[in-house]
Image (tube, rainbow, N blue to C red; front, side):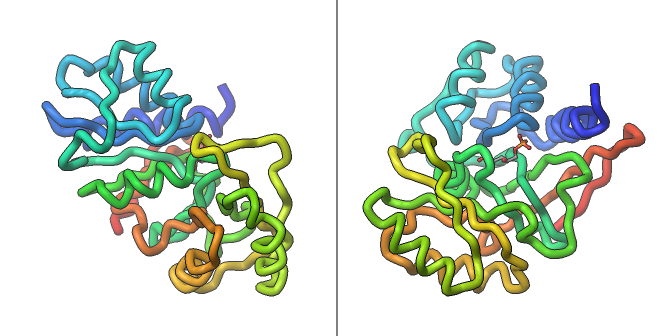
Length: 221
Ligand SMILES: O=C(CO)[C@H](O)[C@H](O)COP(=O)(O)O
């Protein structure tokens, strides 16, 4: 197993301690979360079930025999565990590399505690080296792409990819995001933008990083 994969797995294992007994657990999407789902399966008798941020995670949870609830049937989500494409020291994130950003942001907003799990390479000084995913309503794609260019970005259409919500993704290259909350708010305001992959208005509460030397590092927000 590579150092990166080991880091993801370590972080996923460490996140289990944040899962309260008897709870409905918010579950994100991606390869790091897949390790978490596999860990969660080991304690499935101690939880009530999960709410999920993607069809892919829902399938994996169900394959493990973990009940997946409709979010509308749930009053509260005590903890949400998800990965990230980048995090800064303030636990502001870029997410959406796997295209699940909208449902991820909805569950993160609802969660009392958002625990982000990643390998240590995801920690950066300035967000934006990872292309920023923006989910858009299909008819607005070109208009929004022009708006992103005006702001210094280079949007690239994720051709052939359709989100679980039936929308499209623009991956915006060439950004150095110095004020994440400001850019998140500004892009949120463009008609046709469904979700911006900046998680700054609702950052993570805890970041667990798995390191190459087999350790974990925790940063509290
Ligand atoms: O935001 C996400 C999916 O939309 C993922 O959390 C992000 O892409 C990280 O994925 P991975 O754990 O595979 O590196």
